[in-house]
Amino acid sequence: MDKHTLISNINKMKKEQNAVIVAHNYQVDEVQEVADVVGDSLALSQFCAKNSADTIVFCGVHFMAESAKILSPEKTVLLPEINAGCPMADMVTADALREAKKKYPEAAVVCYINSSAEVKAECDICCTSSNALTVIRSIEQKDILFVPDQNLGSYVAKMVPEKNIILWKGFCITHHKVKAEEVLKAKELHPDALLLVHPECKPEIAELADYVGSTKQIIDYAKNSDNDKFIIGTEMGVLYQLKKDNPTKTFYLMSNGLICPNMKKTSLQSVHDALAFKRYNITLSDDIINRASHCLNKMLEVCK
Image 1 (cartoon, rainbow, N blue to C red):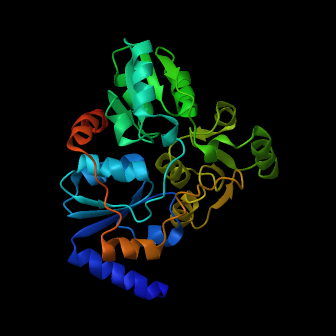
Image 2 (image 1 turned 60 degrees about the vertical axis):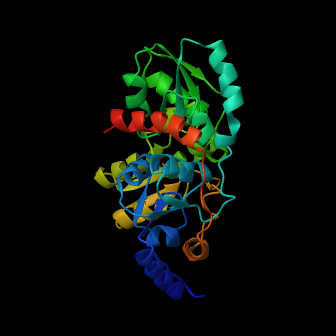
């Protein structure tokens, strides 16, 4: 089936099924083009919690589709590629977290949204890279067990020194592998470009940046900046929106390795097949939904 036919069929089925397509900023260009909403984890969470569709086709990875199901349990949530996972989310399990909670019984437990529904069910509040600072500052306790991203946790600890952030040994394999030498070389090649990086990068990379923020914050910063050249330190999918918003500006990728293979699994064909065959339907137990919804809804209340 050619691209034009796929898009036509997708739009027809979407209307017939009262469905919406949401896509993360890291998805391939053609999937972003067909989506009703494109954004970072926070924007997509907020949208899924409020929209009136019967079906949500989530073009992202597994934990994102789970979050949509937790926030809208009455809706059908479809993940076009069932094997689109997140290695970072797999670095913390509910069992391991329960053991850690015994070690730090007085600590508030904050999970990055890049975690499973079972992990969210064990946490006090969730956060995204967009709102992590707001969430942490909203917590009364001084001690905070932060899972699973040690790099985002380190960035938060630096920005909110009054809190004692207990870090989990997890990371995004795409952002974590970027080396300082690569970044310094990119800055040397493009001395008049501003460096914008995601807080999932290592602390030494964030230290080199002109701006640290989520995908949406990076997109907004570039759009509002008077500068016309930028080195982008996050997954390459974000370049689609950056170039679309800023046709006269120039963007360089900080490292050629900034590609998330899981985010690239979703295609127009798999979006089409998700609607055509109702796959892959995300299901969670009522217990997990009830406990994990507290974690996510508390985040949305703090970050209205």
